[in-house]
Length: 491
Image (cartoon, rainbow, N blue to C red; front, side, top):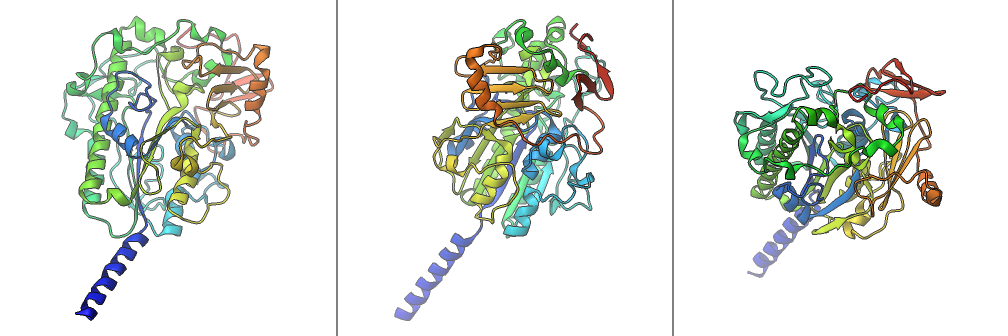
């Protein structure tokens, strides 16, 4: 009997030790174009995101996290490589960094986890921009699931042509279809199937949702969450950009992002705001499906969950709709860590960067440190949300335009040297530019010291949506812009 009890005790100890040695899994959730209109961040008082909010309570949620570029490809490239756009020269929707000779051998986050942690890497939906990283003969991931999009689409655009023509993405509204037919529903279902298979190896599973990227189509049930009156509209200041440099307009000179004036003139502002909120709540429901499936399969206790968005999005603020800006509306995003090694129930106001995810995850998973990354580990904040970070969050848009966001200030320097400064404590909407006031010279100087020392020119293969400034001349997509030129869609 003693031998049997001893054998049993040894077996129990062995099983416990094996369980303790099992590497944590990673569930990596990306949301496209999701700004701070998330419940726990408080970007919109009416937004309903119960599932993301419960994830925030399970872990440490950042309210001052910012992207490294307010555009899909450079933002996602930065996050996955751990390098700034100013380091790689990836500023636009092209090129795919693997096609740039000096960047093609960069080791991305999933590759590093596979090589140094034995992780099996899965992906579905949008993790890199567009089709990047999804090639059948590629090496980014072991298992590639279905892509995602805004599908299904109505027979024709719901809002018709905008001031920039009939661009297919510039559309939104109630569309009578089934939620189960949406591409984002299908990628969540694929991820659920993988979790149901109970992978034996530790896994890195990346799930990238398309919505609330335009076109913002949702069924009536999601619109019904939000009132059809003007109380749903965000606060704006008329002529808000009167004290901002003209150079700020060059960020979205010829892009199809409609101006706020067009939205009001065509009675589309409220429709767009409700469409965006409706799509946000729909995606929240898909995040809930993933969280529920993790728990149902007994994987939640040993899975690090990271939820992030690639950049923010304006809905009339600063007189535009869309991204491509260096203000909080264009850069602030949700960022949540939960699971092993993360203190639950924390909200962190310290500045954080998306490229911090790479070193943070390798640290949480107890992997060797990856040398040469531009980001810094957030583990001190995951253990104590009040732990200070000296380094601010830096966002770069096109060559040599940078926003520096500390805990209480935003400083912007454009390529022509023009500046903006906002006191976030007193002016959270960034309505009053203080850069010309001499009494804030020391504040500006303290932020300028963090501007990137490397400002690489656009990488070879950069074809469009690239703005360059050189010797007093502005060049936008191959067309020289004069300071006196009328602003498209505004003047």
